[in-house]
Image 1 (cartoon, rainbow, N blue to C red):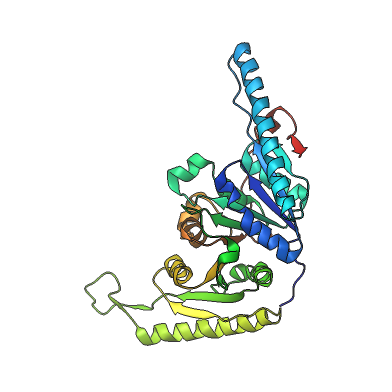
Image 2 (tube, rainbow, N blue to C red):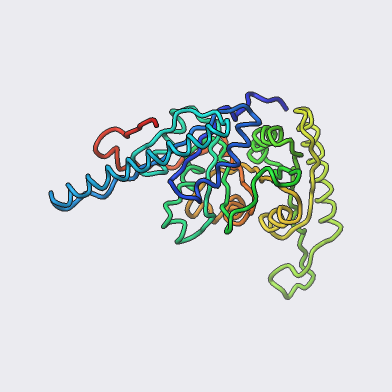
Length: 332
């Protein structure tokens, strides 16, 4: 297993002026310090809706200018704070448009290597109401995205945590294994151990012909499947150790992949979960069971989502700013 390049030289951190968004900063700062990387702060300004008359238009323009000045001042204050802490920074940027499309386009143009951002981890109607910026980026960016699910109240700082494991769910497919390289880089940055995990579902049996569904499971067959999975993980561990990263795989039996992974993260000193996903949305997400979606919504540790290159990308929605011209970008 050979590294092509270190993907964490340029770290993009989207902010929106809220304490929630800033909870991604400690994770981005630690990563930047360990890898000698630069942080780039970015904020997306959403213009107001089109006014109905000239009087409203003048009012909207005045309010919008005040909001923009406030956002730029906020970014400058965060920059000053980080520079005082000795953090290397690229010029911060303010964008104009819909947050998801604007951030995705800027991340590509700026050559970002990883995005670190906070998320509520909400689902259903609340996700749609929030605009689901994280969800949009997962489905449209072929970059690792480290999602920090902001707890209530805020958790202890990253530096106060015990020694950590990086949990990497695998299912034996080439897709899942594309999470290994960024996971190794994260483990090197955090001086953590990599823990590849494979969840083995019980082999079910039908013992009563009158029942339409399986009524029990075959313990011997299930254990054989678990041993096969462990052998596969042992091979993965050998490849990972070639990078100089400590690794020990775990194959375990469980009825729910997401549930088993969340339980491991709850009882073990897990620092992050790293997994690959197609980044599909809508009905395809639900048909696939969406282990990634469940982990993002429920895990109390950061989740690094890797969307492999070549995965189908949903059609991008044009940003509101583009309807009247080019997207506006300003450096702070």
